[in-house]
Amino acid sequence: MRKETRHLRIFLIGALLRTWAFYFPIGILQLDWFGRIGLALFIVGGPTPSFMGLIVGFTTYIA
Image (cartoon, rainbow, N blue to C red; front, side, top):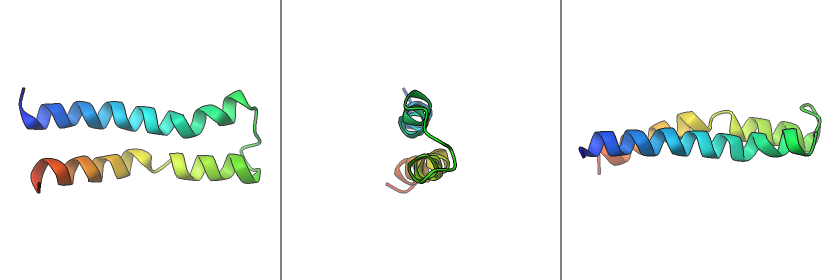
């Protein structure tokens, strides 16, 4: 398997898991989206795919 394909899979799985790791507690615990904890989890979970893209891009093409 090529390095790019392997890193693409890592990106897709990692972005999905990390995003839902922050969004899942909001739904399960029925937190208010605009409360302190709910908003903090929402803000941290939102840009996770972008951060995963940066990390995987750097490890694929620079390292």
